[in-house]
Image (cartoon, rainbow, N blue to C red; front, side):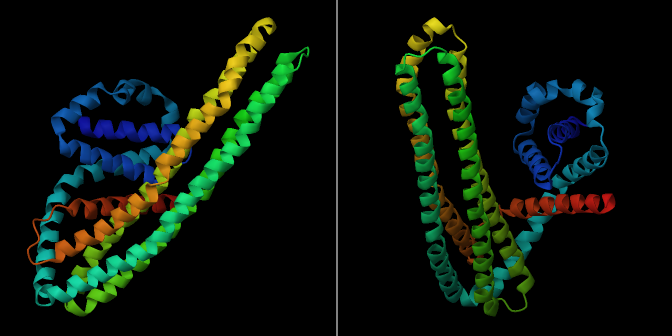
Length: 362
């Protein structure tokens, strides 16, 4: 097995070992990432892989029987074979897309002005459709950040009140607050993820609608080459939907980062409560005074970071449609985006593989 194949197998073993339920999306990410990395700068990438932590785990992974499940036995040969075909398929696909675009441009050239106007109308309609979602995302982020701030603030005040009370068993009286603070952080972040996730689904519906409208608008000018137009629109749809999935992932990752930034405050409180009772009040005083402000700062940083995601996503989608207009123009440059079609094919094949596996299991 080549080093490339071994490294890919290692990555796949890592995700199948780390997760009970391995998804087609995870496998497709691994296969595609390794293909793009290894073709981008093969020598440098291979050197990095050889020095990476995943390569250091080689013997452990292959010697550990817990990785030898039926899924891995079927998945790794499939994925490594798919990876091996990518370079060859890439060159073939690039030439195919180049010829398809050339035929499509030739057919559209007598209607260049009309095509330009239709795509411009589509861009304007897309901007109108997307604008409410950017505002909705900003509103959701602000609302969730305010809610989290409001729900965490009382804990700092209650801790101050407890510290001012001259009671025995201060440690015992404060212990529940540390656990409750941890639970409140986890619950609020989980709720935030759940509320933000549906926005990506709604955006994918809008993408489907917009691409279908563009198909109908351009169809009269692409008679006899509808299949080539459809191919380009499929690539456009894939890129736009991938952007929606990236947005979903960024929202989830940002919420998780916020949780990781807030959790240490609960952990620090637990740690301080383990100190001797005599020095507890002196140790906790400065910490509690700054607790509320520090948590609010982290929440505000999250709000400022995530709120603009909607506008950035809208610009990205509009840019994709603009790129489609340029591709269909008479003076478009060489084909360089064939990789999006190749990636779509990879993800479709991986999804089909998982679907087949599930049917066999059932």
